[in-house]
Length: 336
Figure 1 (cartoon, rainbow, N blue to C red):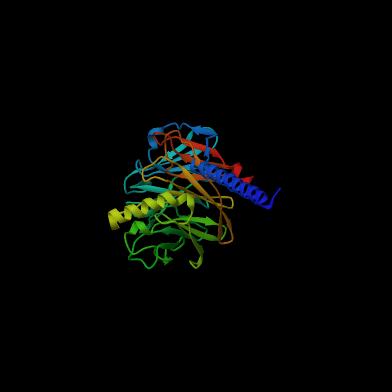
Figure 2: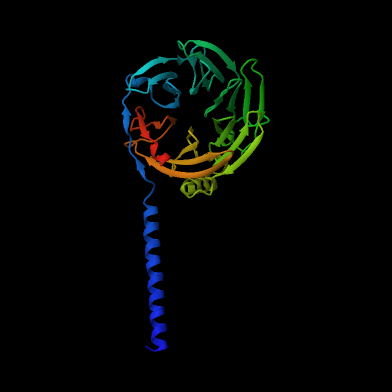
């Protein structure tokens, strides 16, 4: 065989190899474009007394689910086993045991703390009989908040305050602030979901893909911008287009709700402005660092995630076409 024939065969082989690699990459890209894998519910709680639940935020306690409904101003206690609502309390008003925009509820030390939006206060209840205990005035939040043994941490987007995060001493109700604002524009743009992880406070941006770690004194330990995440690309593109079209009036929520599951930070987001896709991002927490480990989509049978929480190996979300039922999803795949 002549040298020219050998060279020709080598060129043909190299071209064939390049073509094969291109086909493989194209198939991989096509698979990626199909979207995130979908997780089906392992059970659905068809709630009794469903009229008391319409648009609510979920909290997972050690013993039960807690739903704070800011439309009906009722707090519902729901057993993990079965679908029975074991207790309902609250009504619209300004007196003890009444709300005017009940948002999130957090249990801590035998008490239940509920942010009362339009009454601008925190209402505290005894978990032994759900009776009113005390009220903390001039403190409220529309996002997740944290209660520790000594303090309450809230995201209060009032630009006249020296910082976006309010810390309230539970004993004497003294107030201090810490953190940096996300923007100088509308208050809602500066809102954070606050989560407790070990001895740290994690602040997750409501309208910006920012995650910050603070200690309990309010010192910034680390900051992460998740805007480069490929799974967030579409919602970030929507934000850019809307910002260009609507200017300062535009508010696009990036993370409607967040939760801590073991050593994971879980974030729900949508790829469409008004879509019913229910996507989740999962980041492994190590110290003050974050490493993305998973992304998935849950099937809510035509509904969308308004709020969710996690308990043991289960993710609980409101959903369905009417937004009333609670869907449970197995999270054990994260351990594999």
